[in-house]
Image (cartoon, rainbow, N blue to C red; front, side):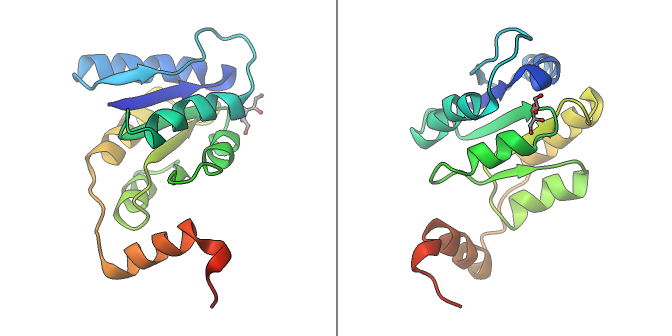
Length: 148
Ligand code: RB5
């Protein structure tokens, strides 16, 4: 199950991604926004991220104007690794190296066809699982207690 969410600036793109999910039989929970009315992206990020940290959803797709604000908000939640992606290579690498569990997209900068491609790559690429990647992810989880 995928947590899908946007603010007003990502609303149209979110609705397109919903169509893509429905056309491809991908299960999702729409965490809002439910209209193009202005809404604060940190609160939208919170709604979606809590579905992931609770185990209700395995991954998330979050949209704002650039993808950046909502990714910063999402990364405040323990266990969330959110990545803004504008290219196919990056959408693949954030899975392979970073085990990113949230893909952030910008409704004002990324078209729906590109977004569908990025979503497809993100959802279908597996984490490399290599020791160095696991170590680095572990360091990020407890960064306050890590030293160089
Ligand atoms: C909203 O106008 C816009 O600031 C927001 O969607 C996002 O792009 C922030 O990073």
